Image 1 (spheres, rainbow, N blue to C red):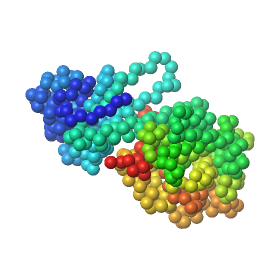
Image 2: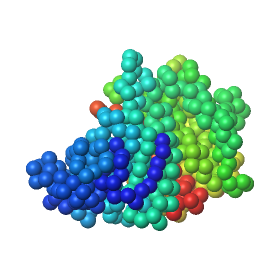
Image 3: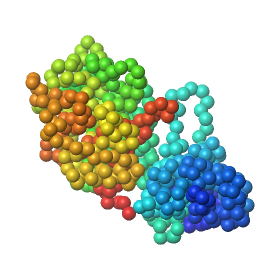
Image 4: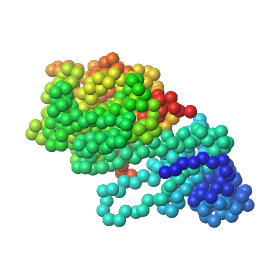
Length: 498
């Protein structure tokens, strides 16, 4: 894909399609006003006839517009004038992209980047343009047989800028948007694959392949035997009933010499039956998405490799299946973690934290600047925040605020959640150092408090992405979140944001 910026008027660019906007009450956006003038009122005529609306999400495709060089003009509604925000901007770009997706357009020029969007610079408008177009055009059909529908042959995406001085910012935004889109697409692909394909071994092969030919990236895979030697009894308790062998995936990207790395830890439960604490059958097929934490950190590694960021990042993924069997871990069993702490397993369906705690302990050896774990950890998080925001927990206020701000900038939203001894007290066990669940109240919080027991001395954050990692229903599929949030965080840490 190629990207370009232009100061040319919308009517003067010979693209296959230009995207312009109109607001409620017939107010024309910058690009629409130019095309309307060049075509001697063509757009206003369609507004008066009711063919074009300013309502958000509405799109009209005009062809053969007089005085305009573009083959098509996509006119999209932007709502009330003066109230366009980044979320509305992305929805408008997505709506226009869907409307032209079935055409043979090879070049798109987005003129909505000329509109005033609250708090957004040319960098972010260009980045959001690229990310949104790629997200909208994404399809997962690799498991279907027969002839597949030909994709839109898009080869270049352009963004309009008001002045030449904005070209550097916008070009960088497009470049970063491309890298993030690569990571999001990979995370979505991994999440959407069925569990009989995307096994722990498959995840390991993907991680190894990413490092092939990349001088800054290396991948190492630890076997169950190696994990046993390390004392990872907690992680291995989850895979005890599975036929598929567990893998510990360790990826190291070195773009900043000897500086301390940011470590990202991902939960990679490639299928979660709940184990002996068996889940209900309805909807269990969606438990293939229980590895979306792993998918997102691997996707983020793909993104930063594509962007060649000047920082060090390490990814650690505990990849397992959670299956019921004669030798599976039972409720009431006590296991010993790599940290030496013992855990009473009261519920085998609270398995993600058992995987993560050993992965977090292992990550200490990298002497991280910060460590962030990402997991589809609790249904309680979905109850608390729905499907709109991930939960952000941290033992450091600065890190918590960084992640929250990164989510807002990336339009990949999170919400700051509490920790505290009053919640951690729910994890007390009569027989072990702690239990793996803390009762029905505050389930997402107590899960985070469990993980906090294994990060002494580290600046740590936990993202519970159970509500945002995938969609159910007719649009069922992985979202690729929180790759944009994590990428924004790392872009900021690398000091390359404009």
